[in-house]
Every structure is written in C-alpha cells, then in structure tokens.
Image 1 (cartoon, helix red, strand yellow):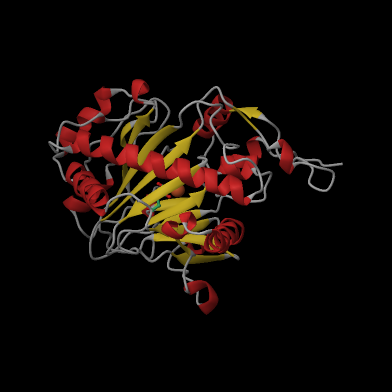
Image 2 (cartoon, rainbow, N blue to C red; image 1 turned 60 degrees about the vertical axis):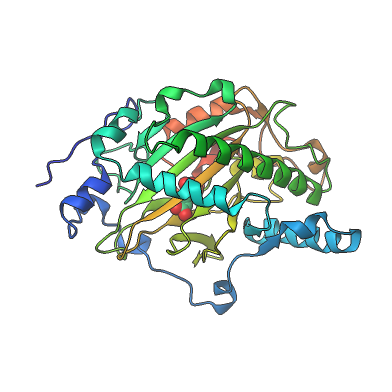
Length: 361
Ligand SMILES: O=C(O)CCC(=O)C(=O)O
Ligand SMILES: [Fe+2]
C-alpha cells in the first residue's frame, strides 16, 4: 500500500500528493483515480468541424482602424457566444513574462515536498494542496495545485508566497499585473460586444481581485483512465489560462463532445466565467472544461481568474433584461456565492444553480 504524506485542510478530506504517488511508483494508479467509463478520456471529438480548434483573436487588430476593428469585435462576439473559449495572440503580455512564470511554477512543484508543505492549504483555499474533496468515495483528480490570491495587493497573505525558486515572488508579481491589464481590457471589450457600456462588468469602481491557480499534472501511466481536473466551469468573471506549449491537456465541452485546445506558443486561452454568464443574462455562457494528463511527461497549467470583491452585488445587467429576455438569474452577494462553492462539490456547471431563477412566468 502507499504510505504517503497526507495533506490536511479544514474543509477537505485529506488525500495523497499525486506527484509523490507518481514518483514513488510510475505505474501506480490507485482505484480512486480511475474514472467511470463514461467520464474517461480520450473521448476526443471525431467531428472535423470541431477539431479545427477554438477561435483565435488577434488583439492588435482590436485597436486597429474602424472597419477592421468592427470585424474583429464581431469575431470576438461570436467567439464568446458560440464557444465561450478563445485564444488570444498579440495580447500585450511579453513572451518572456509567460516563459518565466511557467519556469518558476514548474520549479516550485519540483521542490522537495517538505519545502512545498510550508505553504500547505489551511482551509482558506489558498496554498499548496489538491482540489476540495467532499466524500471518501469522490473520484480524485490526477493533479496537485497551488493557489495564490494575488490582487488586491494589500490583501495578499505573504505567508503563502514561496521564497523558492528565488525569483518566484517577483515573477508572480509581474505576471499578475500584466494579466490584470489584459483581463481588464478583455472585460471591457466583451461588455462592448454586448452593446453595454465598457465598464459594465466593473467591480463597483474598485480594482479587480485576482487569484492564480497553478496546476501540476504529473506524468500518468494510464491517462485514458483518469482526469487531471474534473469537468467544471470557472466561478470567475473571466479566466486567462497559460498552458504548457508541448502537451495538449485542456478539453472543452462543445455540442456534447470534448474538444481539445491545441496550445499555440505565446498565446493565452480565455474563457467566460460564471459571473459574466450571470451579468450577460445568459447571452454568453461559461463552458464546462476538464484537463487530462500525459503519459510521457508532466504538464503545468496556470489559470488566472478575475474576480469581483466578496461584497459585490452581482446580477444580470439591467440593459440585458426586458420582456423578451427575462432575468435568468437573481442578483446576489458574491460572498454567498463563494461560500456555496466551498460547501458543494461542483459537477460540471452546477455552481450556477445557486442563482438560477427556476420558475419563469
Ligand atoms: O489544466 C488546464 O488546462 C485547465 C485548468 C483549469 O481549468 C482551472 O484551473 O480552472
Ligand atoms: Fe477551469
């Protein structure tokens, strides 16, 4: 049997560090990671229309001349409406910032376990650990995670910020600020595509909050039997994902199929989160996605989420509610939404049950 270090957090049942498990025995695959047949990858689409990949938006063209910009804005609108996922190129974040981030995140996960355990999750969702586990029979994800709340800067808890690798703190700081500029710009553009004021998604005049979830998917002997991250939608306004260039691991759900997102070096993957789904009154939807590990090498992915502050009131934008488009969601306090997320296991898009208006007239 495996004699592994267990992690303890207040809300989560303690489970093994996957990286340790994989390192001790490269062929080990405990039963709790093996998914029911219908959940297993690869159920990659054979539909050639879908395999052509998610839309790619060249952000430089979004600040071009009027005619060109309008075409690109239409492309952005259709990417948000038809896919909920797209990749951006020429997004303004330097390639060196992205490469350094990936290097230091991998460097962190490759540190000895004792070092990483200094930053272990203690119940607040921040730190080193695994996705929340709610029951002893819940299937486990083949990944370890490290979560940092990065913005607002005066709200960060430096106890969770690793001092190794040596550049880690500075790297995350630079990355976080660059990604914030991009997410702010994207949220404005996305609002514009809906015909509402560009500041409509704003965090009540306050700066955006931000958290970075770093995922480490160790090499897996049977990637066809497990999932790196279970199907979910993101509880963010939007998410900006930086993924490994060499390994395809992200799948999104489209027309009842799972479509792989092929990495494009230097690009970032954007997805609509639950909060924009609510604020756009369902015009744009957060899309279920999952991650799968690889049998040849480890994979990292870095998801940066733009969040409203916890006391924000969130609901459908008034201009997007009328007689033909009744409100699909109630207005709620974000803190209560977050509480519901930490108390209930997410199954696909179940998070939005929290605010869905069930019985429409
Ligand atoms: O690993 C990936 O590509 C997806 C990560 C993800 O969905 C998340 O962290 O929310
Ligand atoms: Fe996600």
